[in-house]
Image (spheres, rainbow, N blue to C red):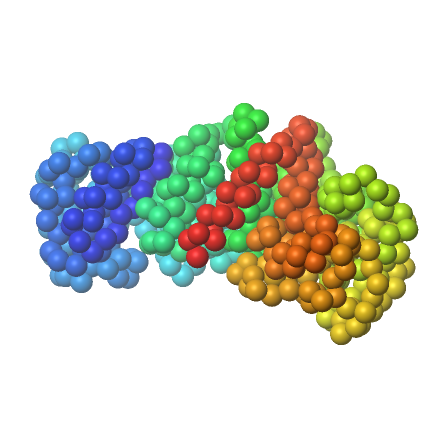
Length: 493
């Protein structure tokens, strides 16, 4: 079950949001009465409540906003129990002072906004001694390994336990705790009002991750990177899994640079079946796998890791074929062989794209702002090199942007001046957010043919989906989900 937390300063807004959430399908709401600017009026909040509630009143040292006395706080919690609320949240140090009464269930909670302590099990044991119906233990993930410790605690608990980690690293636990036996998880009313680090909105929980359908049999996939919060991969992969009727969830796993091997070893306990891989882990992913496809062998980088039936890890690079398929779309049936190609950039995408066009028989020139990195990649590919300052002087039939210049939110930037563009040339921008970059807009104005990064992104994702599930990735589902997601972000900006 998803519990949606409401934290507002006015009673009127708490009541309005509660009704709105029930209309949207919320089964349980947490009323954070410590957020109220005036003295909480429980009669007003509870008498005509449209659905079940948890009443919570947090002190500042527990992450709350209560500014009154401790005695007044405890009195409010007792009043909530007498009023017959469905749940009341009590910290361990006051649980024995607030006795059980009526049908109200007791959630005995512990929060740590700094770390996930080494004595996690001892804390849980102490909470279990406070006459709980449910134990709630929430800590802050400083390392991906904290996620594993927390989920193991939830899975092995004799008393029903809500357990997850806060922060960006801890986001996966907010969903996986359900798989491992947590009776509920928490969401916020909207993305604009996050009450705890790493908290997801009710809409994200339901419409992207389908948290209310996660169960013990749910398979787990995800994307690894750092940073990872911006990734659209969870949006499109979860849409495809839903469309295909597969009981699986695809999550964002933030893993700091250098920590991929030890984290993937630890995440073996979570039985994650496959990962999309992004910056800065593509080379480490290639080294981690027992088996590598030929493109990974050639580039030394993988954007996909997946397990086979024997649990061996395979590494694939789906950017390569996705880039070629996107270029062929723009070529409209004409041969790539012999085409003069200018590639801007020398990162992981440029490496895969460059290998593809070189093997397709194109005459390739590379330009990169960092001259040394450009020289290294040009040497690997066996192609020509141009200085970044002279890129406009390179005669080309195809221009491929593999830099982040022009990516949202810096959408008024372009890596290639408009007057350098020639009528009839093909311009391929690997950026997919926005779909219509300034480079592509100016290219169309000059009479160029264009291909957006959306095509490459959905094709590489579809190939990953097939690695994960054995089924072809539904391109239209990927494309529509991506466009909806990009539009929603741009409208809210």
